[in-house]
Image (cartoon, rainbow, N blue to C red; front, side, top):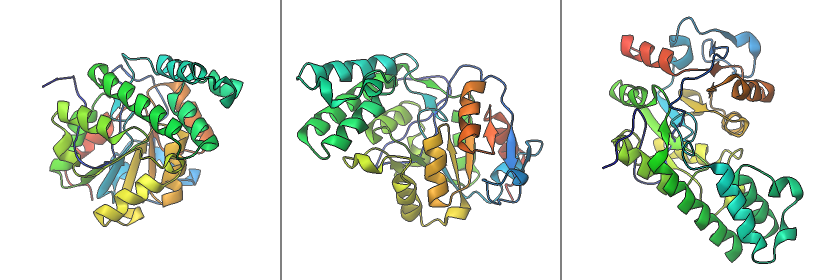
Length: 280
């Protein structure tokens, strides 16, 4: 069994999971929700002096995977994966299938979704998605757990909250990572990831709604932890309060510019609050 420093893993159907970096996060303004009100209203946020404001009322916690839970491509460059997908397309005479910005993208999901928009449900998309999944699986062996994610996942589970992973990554990848870190049991069977219906990837709320429906949870009883604008938009569309995780100021600015009002540079305050006693 592969062991990695602090992280998450889980097996089963798709599950909501948050990933993060194992490197120390840069300072980012930390804010929290007041009374579980509309997270889109800046007046409902304050400095994170009391972590109970952040998690009050959250009986179901939905995690994005790559970011809040771990850095999936920490040792297996996502930029290189995107480049190889583009080269694979070009080797089949499909250079013109992508725009110049899409060909230069550092995100393999941008390449995959661009091809799916032009040839939805095709064999080409199916093979491209399979190639991306294989690269994600390779990346799990060098993924770095987000600081405090592993103990937070275990402690939140022990405190009685139910956890799920909602991600654009392959559920096979999430399950492998979680299983390697003995975390799969904290999420199973609630891992909700990429399917063949690529149009339903976040920012579409499909995976979040799947998790809520499967767990019998109302949106306002849940909390989503994510690190990208697409996570924020999906949570808003589903009516789920959102907490942003930003390992550095650049990522924090991207989330703030997208409208996030609750942003953490570390998961430690949440862990300390849960360890200190009841959530409510």
